[in-house]
Amino acid sequence: MPPPSTPAFVPLKEPKPSPAAGPPGQGAPGGVRIAAARAFAVMSGDVRLAGRIWERPGCPVVVLVHGYPDNSHVWDGVAACLSSAFEVVVYDVRGAGASGAPAGRDGYRLQCLADDFIAVLDAVSPQGPVHLVGHDWGSIQSWEFVTDARLRGRIASFTSCSGPCLDHVSLALREQAGRPTPGALLASLRQLMASWYILFFHLPWLPEWNWRTWLGRHWSRYLRLSERVEVGASPTQAEDGCRGVALYRANFLPRLRAPRQRYAHAPVQLIVPTLDRYVRPALFDKLPRWVPSLWWREVEARHWLPLSDPAGMAAMVHEFVEHIEGAEASAALLAAHVQRAA
Image (cartoon, rainbow, N blue to C red):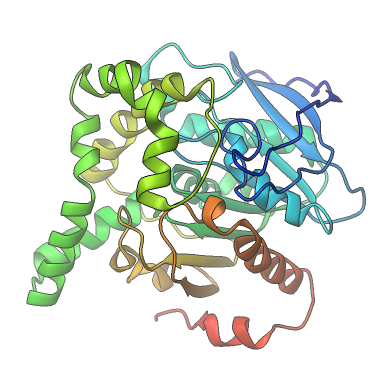
């Protein structure tokens, strides 16, 4: 992979969000005003990645990685809250938002996503580690980052929300199959029913057809009805949805067929929305064996926590980052700490 280019920082001009629609794209509900940010672009191989940074020199750096079918604007409300204390970085993952897309499915493999993250880090924080936060597919790929030996020492902490490590899930399923119990079978059945969309995304052309013909235009309405959040329409929504299905096609079957033992090299805060209809809490039951230090925090919320409660999610990230940076743990963090399994 050629070395990443030096990012070209340019002023980011965004219209003021309206109370009804939120910021452009998938912005924060409730009319949260977004602090001034700068745009940047960096090359990862032959893919151009577009991002934004809320600069606060001398403060810890927090990198927010979005999921599917979102772009980086899903973080606008969280970033607005965090940018008062931290330097905050968001970027559109390959195939989403203003970033470029690889030519084929193999370009969406977890290895390529890790290369992208390294390119972003080399641009925004080449000297010091960052605090990583991921949601949905942003969390799934972030598990790759926090278990990649190339990134040891470059990630100070990881906050995961609604996105498990695919290798951990595959290994847990194999373990359950070897020692089936009624409780484990029931949990697997519930997750299988919640994951129907994964099977759908592996069908040829049909998911893309849905995004282009109707779902792209009605995504905001779907989130309003299913998640009870108000977001503005994104001009790239249909393309984000079409391209992003390659994340599933490029990674799920390889990880199910040949899971790897992936140990995190940074402390992990797990945020578990208990009303998540796509990712059930049982997926994380075996997680303590894979991380050096784990904080498990459950919240009564649906899947899109960055949209439904950006201030609440930002508060948990803020509290965790401050603790990793040396602050005394709060009562909530002390209660959330999980001892690692032997």
